[in-house]
Image 1 (cartoon, each protein chain N blue to C red):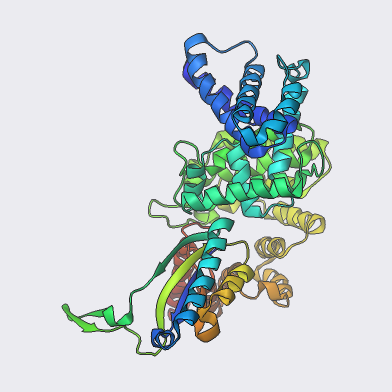
Image 2: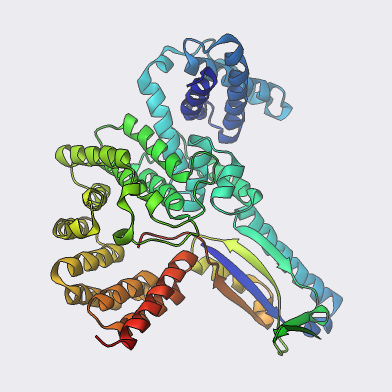
Length: 412
Length: 120
């Protein structure tokens, strides 16, 4: 790595810690963020000329704090606060900042704040990518296919809302579950987008993995954090093989497994094995374990469906949902035959929320096709194709339906 | 989730309104637009010119024919749209219900297709 690259990576890693520290001390998200941006710019120039200081974090905190105070000084309306701030402003960064614990706490606290339950999901995601991930508003907007002004508005509204709700960095809900969910959603957004990496050299998947790694460094013993990281790695490992150049999706069973990322599979498997052996079980760990079973099969036919079925049963008891039931039905069909899977699907028909859900119809089509009922399979595939809002899924489902028409036209 | 809110109306009905009534309608529209911009939900919006300016194009046996007027022969015509990105389908319906044309004509809420795809 070049010296510039080293400094760049370091700045990226330190930015959320410094921002977290400033918000904790001075309270204001917007102003703290501006001050940190200026400190980062100053660092990029000065460190290049003079080298990286001995304690880069303290350097950034000191410079950012000064910028914040300068900002307040130049602002007459805020004159009152100057006295308070000047008192709080340390001449040098306090000793606590030298300890890794403080740095970790501030990054983690910033994540908790960005994923505050008071915020909408879209805001949580945008704010996390902006404040913790350090992405620009333009990059986030591109990734979510909305205009920059829309994303900018979402971010500033999220900050306003935090301010209004009185949420602070050092108190309130330090819940891990919403943070993990936001990281999972960021990953999923990147993984399911066919446009591929839209953030230059690192897509949303890499960003989600990077952030989850950070959380894991801070909470190494949490099984669900490790499980989520493993799940991301084991899923992302298949990304290159899951679609063709034209965006057509390739089902797991037909993927060229030589194109899977062996290194990611190795790391993910190691992580999940460790988590399952040492931590209380949780849904992310179970999903990661299922992904690991898929990934370890050299050919689709080698997949250990019995183990996958057992894992989905556990997942259903830990965190029941319609989506888990759907996947359970597929696994049951692979182990006990299509009728077993179809029977499980029948239990979902009563659920009103599932009525228009295209995946129910898609899975039913798949199981009916396995059972040799091509006419019914075709009808299910077409229903699924009409219900989805994903163009690649629609194309795939329509081609499956067409295949069923050909099958039923040629009696066996 | 991204939705297109399609505005359907009959412009000639609004032409018969008083200036005050029309101003009140515009004010309602401006208020919703401001709210959607502020909330970070608005992706884009466009209004279409009057249907008298529409031309309908057909190609039959390789020959292009154009006729004046819109494709659909109805009093109510497609007049414009808003594209929004909101948390729930219920929220999209709520926005559509507040758009003034919903009171006199109708709004159509349609999900927008995307290029992403889940694992199969």
